[in-house]
Length: 485
Length: 93
Image 1 (spheres, chains in turn brown, orange):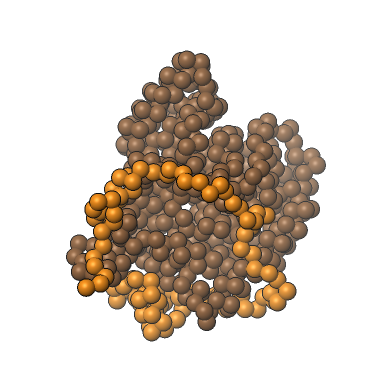
Image 2 (tube, each protein chain N blue to C red):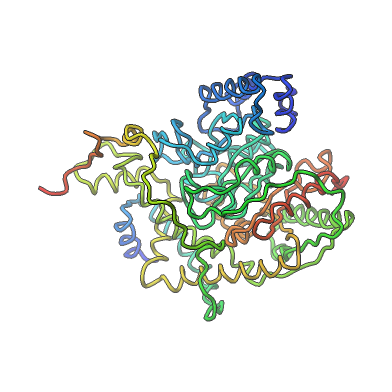
């Protein structure tokens, strides 16, 4: 394996900063790897803009200017995040030819920091579904288990094609696929990273976050993209950068364990092995947390089993509204034969959207209809309040909460309907933090890689602006892995 | 959700489906609405809906014109445009 594939993003940046490597050579190497990517991680590589950005960073560094700790490092960008003059499809035929006229704020920030965007990663169509199987250019395979599916960014990092990526977490998909591919994803506090310039789906919940192979890389990227943005009306005014200094141990920290063991009851035989694996992972993590000095306590969240249902309703309602902008007039797919404005609307949307997006639109408009509004949408918003209140109450007693990021059941390329159902069930694990707007991180379980290469990942949730607590716990865990499950 | 409701929603949302898609949607929604019934059992009579997860309100900015993107770049994504405007079929005779 080439040495470039074994370095972390921070190590790579240091070598570029010290001029042991040039950003241009690193970008060329990365683009060559992407061209032979067997997992379909990328929708579209960006060779011209990548090489230009890399050359510009080299020029800055040669003149003694270092834009950031990650200057010169290649980064992939989820295809739901806009970048000026780059094609952005959001995984949908609807946007097959769309070229963005402006950049998302996060893209401006990473360019200012000297990172080098090398391409756009595969995503489920418009972020809907979360099954990894609805992108119109085909699914991404999980490099850990190539017979199963993954998300583009998680697979690109797990394959060591790129050390960093930006992803939009709407319903928890990047956390789930990070967990399934042994990588790190941080969903920041809602409002701490600008959402300006994303293809919107669940506007009240989605956040752009950093994906990486290591926690320190993800944290360093978070420090670059976080902060107030006047272009985003939901952007929080205050931001404290993460301190990237790992603690020695976890003494004085309290971690609550959410009762996901209950979901092991009644498992079918076929799913028992993944459940047992997940059970062992949680047990190992809990033991490790105790050994490292943390106080552990089981805790309860009465509405836990409802979170995925609530998120399904809210996501559909907001998605239905957001997707109404796709009409085939101003941008997007337009059918070949049209005789009326109605033909454009119906033809554009019916040909441009895949089935899961159509279902989301139908469900959204159903739950928002006058006769159903109170029963479904308003009730979902009220239960969302209960979930946030209960999580807030718990996080007054605990620094963070431990839970899985997925059921760890595999998504198979040839089973789209089963994948969709599984994805809905997997939202159980990611929906609480999504609904509450709290930060959550998915990371590899604290097991020595030699013995736990295929171990399911873990997830931690903290309160608003609790990213530092997530970093503190995960950095100690990752530095002190258990020898085996 | 029955076929009549589905037709009504499809018309409202400017969507049409193949027969296979129709059946898939009806089957999927039948299961989903069964699952959603459980939400009715939660007592929310004293609970306000949560719309905004973080404590922000009345976010305003200067009422100033900000150049966002060149007009030609925006128009370039339209299937038809003429004299700086989007083109769509006539809606009035």
